Image (cartoon, rainbow, N blue to C red):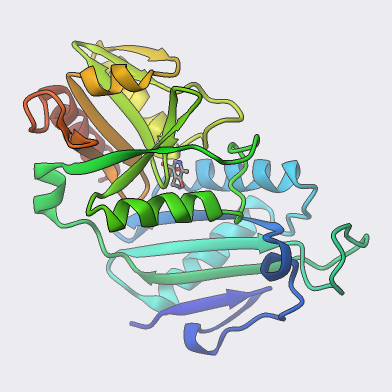
Length: 279
Ligand code: PMP
């Protein structure tokens, strides 16, 4: 088992992988990424992740060199070489190396990078007990739907959460709850789920989509609108969704208990249903 990297069609050990200091990803954050995990050794929702990678690339006029089948073959090869029981696949496409200039020259060769590492899931006890969160001002740009590598506001928000001893920073813009620094946020009021709508102010989470579909199957109502901060505090249940967090209950926010301070029945049921989907 070994951490494996891929650069523009070539596999090599992760420790030996490097790219140019002139790469526009390094110089400008001029690039996009995806994170995919495996269940049972197989990539989960690969089509949805690669479709989002295509959308992100298109939005930045970034050349996406590989078709779906090519990506699937490279990912399979990476998983085979790394041979972890469960893996986390990171893909990054940047505009490539060029002398530093904000405007980019035509015909740049993109830098396409992938890493395959061992997946380290959250401890089962954390999933079961739920986590604390805090609200943080959402100071991000106007195209949060693009999964760009410009993550500075997310980095600072998550660090703030870490320093406060809580798991996630929940972002609030002009009084409206958008999403987490690394997750989507869904609140429960009785048998209704409320979550920010898809659009330019959130990343359309692959997990969010799966969970909302499950919720509808379970006969829950889904309202896609921005909750206010006071609605967040008053929610009967609150949870995060994401590739690495899966369905993760939030039991305290800004020091206030949500519901009874324990994961509620709707969240627990959706978490269970979600895991059934991954098998
Ligand atoms: N929002 C943000 C800001 C994220 O970084 C992530 C994690 N990629 C998500 C939402 C959840 O997306 P997904 O379910 O596709 O992992």
